[in-house]
Length: 168
Image (cartoon, rainbow, N blue to C red):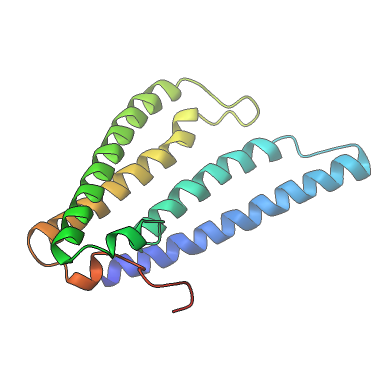
């Protein structure tokens, strides 16, 4: 697990760097457009691609940390057995969706490798690979959680992540 924690920290810092580059590109382009009637040609395209990567890889990290919104106020009303059933159904259905998304994204990436972005010339399949990475990563997180749940290794306090109020 120590490797996973280090990898997560590295990815988080890369995402912070990408956000900084994106902010500089967008701000610089605004200043150049309105101040000098000029602009950075590739700024909008690269910023859009970076935003996709930030959102999708960020969602994967949040999934790993169990930070996505849930219906904890409803699930908390059940006993431990009901919480286990709810957790199983939620994770299994989400896993199914992620696997379908990974399958469709792979097909789209293959098609997208022949299609290039108009300004930078980057193959769109590379841009779309963020979705493949996120969906496969989320599938692995969910499969591991399901394995822990079914094998009895998941403790009762883990069944409803972040079930307290904000600030508790």
